[in-house]
Amino acid sequence: MKLLMQLSEMQHFTPNEQSIASYILSQRERMLHCTIQELAQVTYTSHSAINRLTRKLGMTGYKEFIITLAREFQQSTQNGSNHVDANYPFGVGESPLQVAAEIADLMKETISKNAAILDDGLLTQTALLLHQADRIFIYALGDSQIRAKSFQNKLIKINKYAIIATELSEWAHHTLNVTSSDCAMFLTYHGKSLNYMKAARHFKREGIPFVTITAKPQSELAKWSTLCLQVANDEEKFTKIGTFSSQIALEYVLNVLFSCIYNMDYAKNKQTATESLQKFAMSDMMNDI
Image (tube, rainbow, N blue to C red; front, side, top):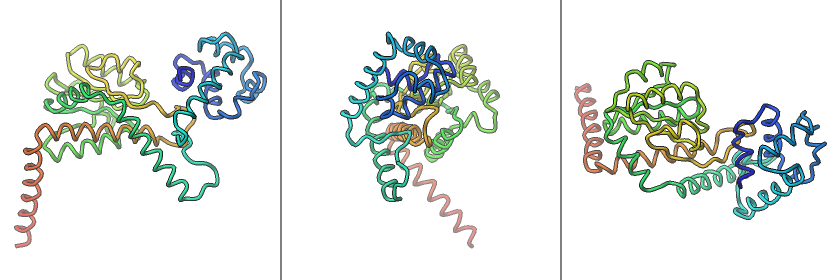
């Protein structure tokens, strides 16, 4: 799936090339019968722009590009007859129950795919790094910050404190307060935030460990990381209904990490949770007297 992956990642694409790639990925069936003239017309580009893109993708021209594209489309269909499109998991006019079934299939497929790419050694190292850290500073924006909040909430219950560094736009101040006994974590599907890169440079310079969870393990941020956990790259940046698959993937990996951290001190963490509940129950009783 090399060609489809290149089109999806859009690395070093011009705005015109991004427009062409987005159309190709969102109109798969139509593309197999699309001439270069028609593609130029619907994407408001030119023959030369399309030819430049095909050469950038390693093709000799549009004809070879279409043949390779058709082969990869066929392979992706054969690899999963029940495959749900992460960008458009449901169609126009479908009933609520049909939509519900397809979202359920997408969630199951996403979790299965991400479970398959997890590495035992890397997962162990990441959980251990977070377990041993005095504090965990999490960098996450938008929908990913919601996942970060959920992870933070779970950690608090076992007396492990995490700070959302990007909350209230205070990331720069938090970055300067992270020490080598702490750990930072970046939750970013595409890994292209300039602010994250600034923070990462500082961490590298100061010898501060940091983890990146991303769909782009080839990004500079991922390469600089102490450890990097990859999530499946199923969503296209410019053509999707919502961040269904990416957020399911992040939530799953964070839940796995929390469970691994919990498991490292299972008895102690279970006792901590029980004692906390008992203390609050006693406090409520005293207030009632």
